[in-house]
Image 1: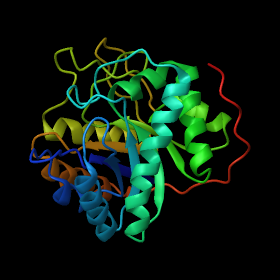
Image 2: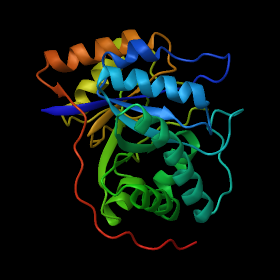
Image 3: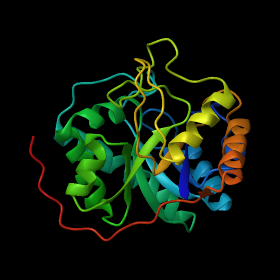
Length: 263
């Protein structure tokens, strides 16, 4: 068995520092770097790309709604054309730093509210998928497992990675428990590790409503902003490898022609 461990990093801004990026990068196989819309700035992006390149992990663009104050977690009314443009803009910004570092951009993963909106809205998901395709059709699109986003990626001929979460609780329909709800984030490391192992093995996991559900997991997210993120990432990787599950970034597929946007 094999699974990817991805982390959301590069979320510092100016003099304000968030996360344990260097420590987390020692234990993951993919990194999603903030592109300046919900977090990050040019120097943070440059520095984080360099860290990820030295660590030998796959580098991805963590694209978001333009919401620095709300950390990209507030929904906005945006058109498909706006989502296409902001996605393409952020990919291009990060790609400049990646190219300068002598590395390659491997994948794209939306952040926060944009991620959850695209998970349920096929039109927004299509806009993101089309922007990824138009920038580089060999890149991988990462989205919530079983949601509209990976379906859109497949429609546009992209390789997709269905993402699951070791440290988030789920609803019975397979969506993530909203962060506004108590217990949305699993704080106990051992409980999160146990859920990660179950997901990696294809076992059913508990939901907030009670029924156990199966979630496809090509990649597991490690939140860089959680308390003791580096310790959690190390414990998670050790547990997976001890269970005979290899940790490695997913490979890309050849693309097809992108369909035009429809707003």
